[in-house]
Image 1 (cartoon, one colour):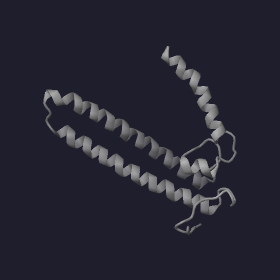
Image 2 (cartoon, one colour):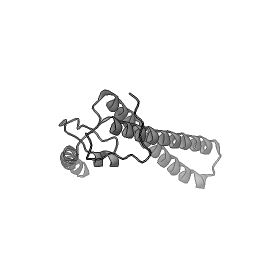
Image 3 (cartoon, one colour):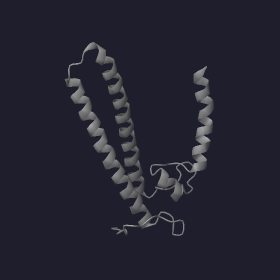
Image 4 (cartoon, helix red, strand yellow):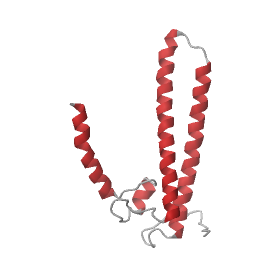
Length: 141
């Protein structure tokens, strides 16, 4: 089903949750975000190839390696986010987008605006983070 969105459309709490307009809005938002990330990941990959072709003296090698490691971490984050975006687009297709995968409750428009790839409601996310804190603290000892 094709949904035409007005250019100024923003999802609202005053309309049915995850109606076709809202789903199309988030689909377009996710596609645009993915396109930007893919472009940036390609740009980083090209920069890494370029720098690896250059001959660096011993003094510059450390700085180049640190720069390369940082760029690789950034690119890997982008790639992970692209996978999350693809998963979110799949949830739009199968009708589960916008609902907490733990409780089945609405994630909420405001949270999805801030984090369109969210899979948990704010409450479920907070529970997960509280459960993770003791695990992380144990690693520091």
